[in-house]
Length: 291
Image (cartoon, rainbow, N blue to C red):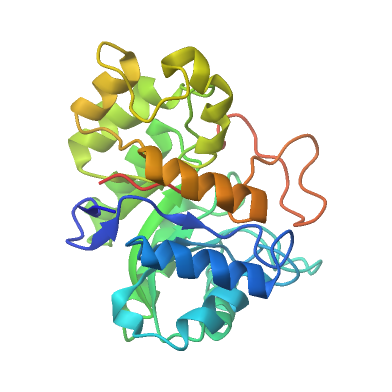
C-alpha cells in the first residue's frame, strides 16, 4: 500500500484509511483485531473512529487496545466529536464543554496521550458559534498537544471556507481534512468541495461510504481493478482531487465490510445500533483518505 501526504500536515498516511464504525457492533474484538492485523500487514497506518461508535465508544476501546501493544508514533488516529454521548443536555454538540469532555473520554478509551486528527462530526447550527468551537479546538492543540490537527466532517463548501476564514482571522489552527460522503452513487462532492476548494486549499479528503460505489462498479468498469481512462472519475484522480482504492484495496474493503469493518451510511431515522442521527442533506458528507 502506498503512502500519501495528508494535506498540508506533512503526515504520511496509507492510501487507505480503515474505518472502525462497526467495531464492537458487527465485529467483535477478535474479528476487529484480525482486520487491523491484515490492514497493518498490507501497509495501512491510518485509522478512523468516533466517540459515538457503539456502546459508549466501544470502537475506540477496541482500537486503543490494539494500539497499546504497538509503537504509537507509527500510526495515525482520527476520531470525531459532535453527536450525543449520553442523554444529558450538554453531552452533545460542538460546545467547549462537550468537546473537552468528549476528548478526555476518547483519550482514555484509545489509551493514548494525543489524537492525531480530531474531526468535528457535523455542522452544529444554530447551537454553537463556530468561532467558539474553533477556539475550543485550539485550546486542545495548545494543551500539551492533546490534539495535533483538526478536521471537519459533513461540511458544505461554504461552511468549510467560513471555518478557514475564522481561523485565519484569529490565528487559530485550520481544518486540515474533510470527510464528505463520496462514491460513484453520491457525487455532489465533485461540484464545490473537492476540485475547487479542497484542492486549492490543500485539504485532505477522506470520503466516507465509498463502498456505495461498488453497486455501480460494473457499470463503470465491469468490476475490474482499475478506473478506466476517459471517465470523469479518472479525471478526478488525475487532477489530484482524490485517490481511488485499487484492486487490493477493494479486496481488503470487501473483507472488512463482510466482517464488520467499514463505516455505513446512516439511513432513515438513524442507526439504531449506534444512536447516530440521520444527517441533513447539507451535513452529509469517510474513510478512504486522499492527500
